[in-house]
Length: 108
Length: 114
Image (cartoon, rainbow over all chains, first blue to last red; front, side, top):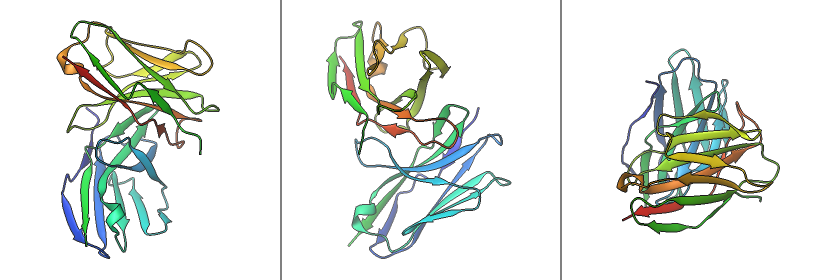
């Protein structure tokens, strides 16, 4: 069975901290990768796509290691508003598979 | 910013009844999807739809489920003979393409089966 695995957390960090989330996927043929965030009882919202060369969007950095089938998300200078569940998402053809999510709480 | 809209936001139904969940995808998107999320669990893929037909479906999407695009804007999920375990959030999503094109989600319909 193809799976996407994430550390469920929770991660409790102070404002301004740097926090990193990891994700592994089992299907070596997976084509596309994303990080979504989900607030409690809300819909998943796209945070960023993950590219092979790694990519950065403000305080967020995503990395992909195809050989190890591993994806990471780094959040720098974390803010209270970053508190959410972060979902690792792997696309196989048209089939989007979600990890169970890593819960982050940023505290003042 | 264009968005995916879903109705109703909350549906309460007696077990055994049929429900229809409605979605209006983003207007220039070509691919449509349904997902469900049981409370406290992960988001699960149900079905993808392109060019007026199902392109992929998961093992969850059995004969109890069907999808339809009855007109140029709506995309519906029908669940027949609902069971208690069908209670979940149902999310519709759409994308312009596949591959590295991300999917954009509606804010979901909470389905409660009594």
